[in-house]
Image 1 (cartoon, rainbow, N blue to C red):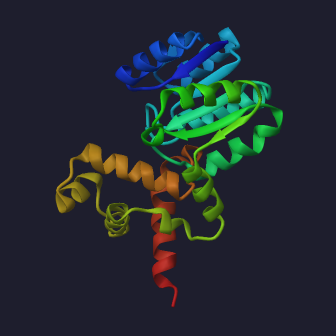
Image 2 (image 1 turned 135 degrees about the vertical axis):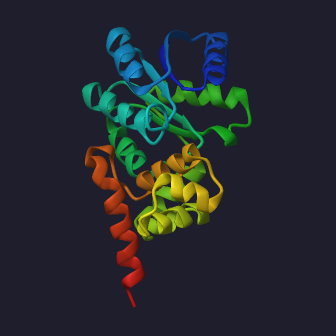
Length: 218
């Protein structure tokens, strides 16, 4: 079975390559970002793609969006998402594409057995599914909660300061965070509020407007 792997952490990427090859799979390409994943999948046309969700340049949902592109181009291509996060919006779209072939979504921190992980890969490649129960739970709850409820307490603090007009540097100074950390929090906020990169620089304004709309409700 030919596999294309996408993971931005070099240590985890190399570890997965060795793990899959030890299980008898052939890793034909290992990409570090979503663009590399799309190129490798087009070149090698693998039976299975294994991808992380958050990769360069924004570290929000590039890997998962790339997986959706691949599923539209080749509905028979099996895709397993392996991530630390449940990106609900695009995960739901990916799972909705499962009628054309195998789909899986596993959380890295909850993979406790190597043999079960390999079995999940083979099941997805054969046209089945492999879903972490936490993924299922979050997707079921998605339609019954306000998107702002998905934010962590720290992300709420960052969004509140954004609404006050603070820059990333100003937010970092207020919360004692580096600008890089603030940027990651803001990326998470955009993803959780379903504000895609296609909405460009306006995402910051849209996030603030949603925050202010909720705050103004009785």
